[in-house]
Every structure is written in structure tokens, then in C-alpha cells.
Image 1 (cartoon, rainbow, N blue to C red):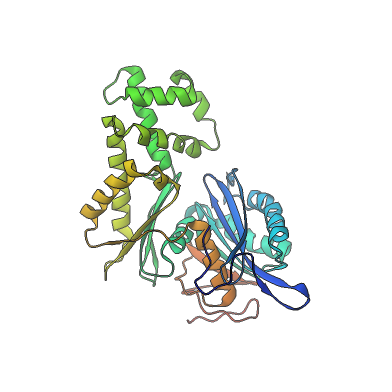
Image 2: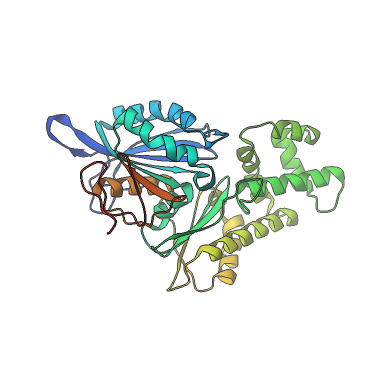
Length: 362
């Protein structure tokens, strides 16, 4: 993980007060493939990181805050012990699905973090926002975050725009689960003898999942179905060089990515565009057609490598919140901050030292 600023302390240090008081911030990244958390110094230097492969459950009220805290509490205690941090000044939690499934999280998580760890300042962000901040920092542009799912987010620094991120049943077009599902469909077409099938993908699917008639029974009951679908995406990439069906799936995926980037990219200036997430580790089979699709869809965009990942973005947000210099646009669904009992509206302001106090300007 990266997150230290150019003038911050070396990793392994933190702001220390009198009597062994060591301040830090908490960053959390909750996604379809599990939960990650980190403790960093207020200067953004990472101190300790831990992860769990178990995704946070989604229940009747959306993302389950109880299940998140059930996993997070022992993780944070481990992080505090490893880092030597004794006091958490702020926390930033990036969660997949927050924009549409985050009501319970927004209602309960800040209070739970305050009770368990004395954290008075909590930022709740869609994982697309933490991905954006990790990739580009507080600059105007657009970021496509692709892993199990896919979402694009853009900002002109006065507000946020998003595209897709509707989950594997309704969208996430071009993401890992989308690619994996398309690859498995091609495998089943080959099994049936239908047009559009791929013998290469059939062989890969049988090697990974066993006889294909058993695939629905293996897949449909799984609570982590999107992650299971996404596990087949690298198999599609591995076949793309020699199999035209696999290559077509990836070309369609990157077309969706480029369209989502174009939908959120600021209209003014020279837009910066970055791509972040584990899906891009598939390398050239995905990246080469992606560059072609981006050049066609957003010819004036400035392509930038992502500086960091969503957990890096959560560290940056938490550190900015602790320092009082967080100046990202706030949004009820995408990024909100609670200090004490107050929820900050509008643009995220410069914060004073008193918990619960806030102003409405930069």
C-alpha cells in the first residue's frame, strides 16, 4: 500500500504526544472480495495493514453494519497493537454499494466506531470515491475502478458524477464478474453446441469448476457469487490471444469501461483519466484494447497511472479529515462526514479541533 506524502515521515512512525500518546487514522476498504483495513500516521504514512477474504453481508437494510463491525473490531485491535498507535483521530470507510445500499451503514457505523475506539470524525465514502482519491488525489478527472465489479466516478471538484456500479445482476459492465459470466456463457454454449461457444473456455471452465452441468448448482446458491464469477475472468484473458470469442469478450468489456469514463469525465479543461483495481492486473490482453477504446471515446483525455488503490484513498481521506484540510465535494450518497453528532453538508469544510464543530466553507 502507498499513502505517505512526499514530506511525511517514514513508514513506521506516527505523531506522538506526551505520555506515550501516539495518534493515527483508520482506513477501511470494503468490497466484493473482502475487507481491508489500515492504520496510518496523520501524515499519511502507512503503519500496519490487515485483510479478510470475507465480504461484508448485504441484508434487508443494505450493507450490514453489524457484520462489518464484527469483522472490523478485531482487525483494528490487531492494527493498533502492531502500529503502536494509541488514539485514532479519524476514520474513512470506503464501501462497495454505499450509494444505493448504505442507509444502515450511515445510520449506525459512526456511532459504533465512536463507542468502540473513540473516533469522533468518520468519513463514509463509496468505494468509487476512495478509488478516485487513491488514484488521482484531489484533482479533477475521471477514474474507472474495476475489480469484481466496475464503477466510474468523476469530479470537477464541485460535485461527483458516477456511472454504472449497479451490481453484477444489473450492471458492472466490463468488470470481473461481467467478464467471467460472459466467459462461462461461452463455455456453456460450446457444451450445448450453440453458436458463439468457445472450446477453449469450455476446457478452462471444466478445469476450474468440474463438469459443466453442475455449474448452476455450484454458482447460484453462493453468497459470494460475483467473486466466483470474477475468478473466471483471468481464464478469459489467458485465452484471448488465440481464441476469438475470448478476445471479443475483452473488447466488449473495455468498450463498456471507456463509455463509463466518458459519462463522468469533466467537460472542461484537459481531463485526467485513471484506471484502478485488481482487474487491470490481467495485463496486455485487457490493457491494449483498453487504450484503443479510450483513444476513440475520449481522444482529448490525459491518461495517468493510478497513484494508489482504494485503501490508499481511504488513508488520504482519513488523514485530511484529521488535519482539517479535506476539501473534496460532499454528497449524501457518495461521500459524507460525521463529526461527533453533526453530519457535514455541502462541500467538506476545514474542520476545527472540537469534535462536533464544523463550518460550511473552505
